[in-house]
Image (cartoon, rainbow, N blue to C red):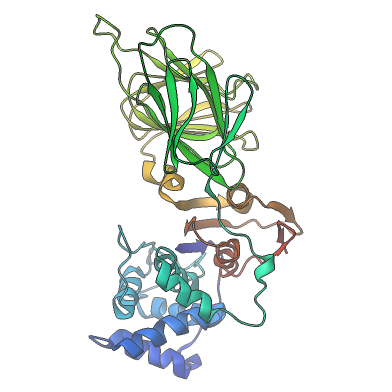
Length: 420
């Protein structure tokens, strides 16, 4: 877990060093560490107050400063990697995150130390237990915490009946015409039994706040729904086009199908927020892309990972290449962003929140959807936040990450996130 906020912290002189600070420096200077020293390091990073950790890393920053005109002045990436090595930590799947700090607008560095370690432990069962036990203080209020969301959704059938997917057992849930609806683990499959004849039935899958779900449509197209999202689709597709309707945030891996007896592809069309009338639509031949179209957000964003799509809205069309993102808002119309970090866009699908210079309101809207919690602002926070937070964390852990930037404080009351 990594997070920072564009906020100033005090410059700390070298005379402020403490005994634990000296021990930390000694451990970083050693070639190897004993298991006891590794445990001390993890315990120290877990329990030390934010301001003290800020002071420690601030000194590390200052040691790399050459002159005031240099920008960036110092890259803490080597320090972070060194801390991981000394603690015996290997982050699964990727290297430690590295950002560059400038003298003005220096980030709250302590959070990097603490939450890069926390991110590792939250990804596995046994280390997570160690963190929880270390944090079991008298001030802890378990009844005020909220667990992360899970794979859950509701399936609405053509006849109006509902199936709660998170409670349904594996196997055939229903049969719509010539299509079996099959639950396999935490995924739903639409499997054709015979030739696709007659009229297709329409189904809708809805994820609540605090839920995600994956589906494979009858044509082989794979769909992932983020929290508070929906997709309406036929149980099987016709020979001329494939049309679905969505709300919220949905990631697609569209199967490429040719028309019978022709080299022409059957187009795949995604209608976005059709009830609102201004969501537009995406025309696809075969590709991977993400659509973010929550009604409470000011913009609709269509991001292309592979292939090609055409985004249409109010008579304006934009053909996207991989790495491009079409952004539409009723106020500003349409624009196309280049060289978008597509893996950051679909971080939610891979189990992470990713915030890149986001205002606190945007950060908390995402948290509120995943934790099914409302947000109450008692003060305005103008800072922008940069964070990678595992989505399997408790809400209190995610909020603690934001608090350690030193610019915001939260309480959790009756499923409400209160910004103090």
